[in-house]
Image (cartoon, helix red, strand yellow):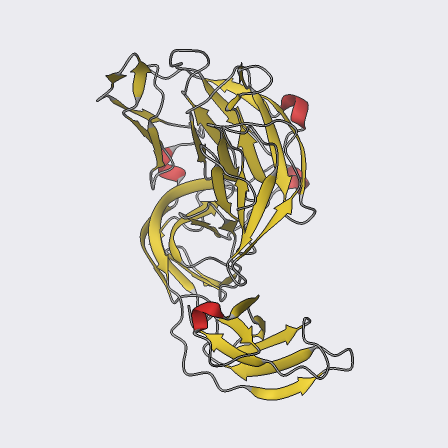
Amino acid sequence: MNVARDFHTATLLPDGRVLVAGTEYPNDRTCELYNSGTGQWTSTGSMSTGRAYHKATLLPNGLVLVSGGVSISPFFTYLSSAELYNPASGSWSDAGSMTGAHYHQSSTLLPDGRVLIAGGSSSSSATNRTEMYDPIQPSFSSWRQGPPLTNSRSFHTATLLPEGRVLIAGGGVGGGVSLASVEIYDSGYGVNPAWQPQVSQATAAGLYGSVTISGSEFNGISEASGGNSQNSATDHPVLQLRSLENGLTTFPLASSWSSNSFVSAPLANFPPGNAVATVFVNGIPGTSAVVNVAVPVPVPVILTNVQRLTNGAFQFTFTNTPGALFGVLATTNPALPLSNWTGLGIPAEVAPGQFQFTDQQAVTGTVRFYCVRIP
């Protein structure tokens, strides 16, 4: 990295880059991005405050919420402030302040898009304070204090359960005292459980495949709203798919549905791995199921349409399994081992199964050798 870091955060962004933010020493405000296609680190916008022991949470809108922590310099300060990182612009903006300072806290993205901050320390001892961040509210009112934890705790874990509740386990209270206690946070949607859609099974055909959900009450019991011309019978379940790796959230379109089944349109631009599938009906979230979105298996690569563009760039295309992942390497000396070749990036999938890569670094008259590698 460009800066030595500890007690920092690393967040996988929707475009595949990794945002690394914060450090204890030297308390640097700078942040950087890792590109897995090139293996390179580049600087990005700096936070307004140098912080460590903080939390970073990817929001459904693609922004990254960084909250709390401590600032080491010029004075040791417990932080209640929060910031938002925009991957599109590489810039940070104010996200308001929590009702109190938190470090070593937990940060959990809930199915409705809110973020639960629980526990941590606000001074030399643990706290039982909880906060709720609502991303649709303006910064001055986006934070609300929640019900206190049963026990003050820091260094604990928080795990979102399939039914939408949060399991908060262990931690410590300071002075070397660890906890065996566990508690459940229920966000309390205020709905009759009998009205919630129930998911019994979820399967995914992988990237560029469909997600199939089976269960019950997918048409709902009541209208979304009612009264004269305001009647709104949606009769349309909505699927929320959230990656367990980085919290990336998407709502795949439906290709078909009934009262007990839902089949999505093919997925695109979603990270592989386990994801939580939740069905919403008339705005009411139901139970969830964990589904594995597998990486498609590629076949041997054969480059086609190899050409040099008028601006001197070099371009090639190839066909392969839709959604498969590749990296491009280049060198001027093919005798070198692949570990010494230069990573150029990731081919773009311009259409399902159609991949294209353009080397803008190519110089007219220079011989370069290329390799398309399957990660």
